[in-house]
Length: 298
Ligand code: C5P
Image (cartoon, rainbow, N blue to C red; front, side, top):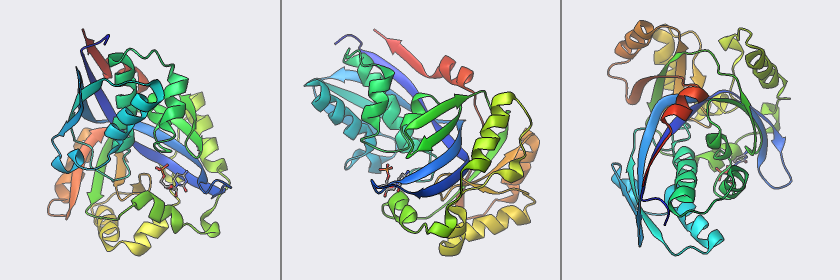
């Protein structure tokens, strides 16, 4: 064992834009998405041990096959490792909310165990292993602002999208196999070319201003139609004066981008009493992520 303890921050993401182009022969959907990292993060501490153990502030995550344990078992199998690890997870990112919490924890786990177990795997190898566990995971090896294509495996890092305050509203929706179920409800009339998102990404790349009203998400009409909880939050956000209410991933988290902290705090105050988790956070750039992401102690 080459490292004793690794601490990692696993950041949440929002999809600024998410287009679905069509269904692929392998059953997945082809997407084009502009993703953005948030300051909101889970904290993970990995300590070398003989067995594999997960301890979490969200007790339900310790049960069953979550992505942290699956990532550890995949690495053990791929590399013929019998060593274990104790993972302590401080969960802040709402679970199954469209914010990529599970995928981000998974990428952090692969990176940390590569260190702890001294595997020496390249980032490319870890990215390709991560695809066995979920389509959203490759992005988290890059973070920051990125254009994500294919089923999620093609990640093009971009210069940072301008700093924003972000109000996150996560309604209480419990949908088993949420992502799969919602992709199953996508019909061809929801398919688009991906050109709008690619054009937005090109503007970000050139450092040109981007109009938030051009952001869209192919899952939004489905969630508004099928989930009264999402619709109620959507309406409350509009009543509270939010102009552009956006959806992250396959939801159910809605979010609003704001330039000023005071506007973010005022919006949160107006949402008091809403049956949803309301959080105020900010976007974060790749540079900020790199300076805080990993701490290794021998
Ligand atoms: O990749 P992940 O395991 O997160 O995906 C869960 C399910 O969501 C897949 O089995 C598939 O049905 C659907 N999916 C899709 N297209 C994607 C990503 C996910 O159809 N790009």
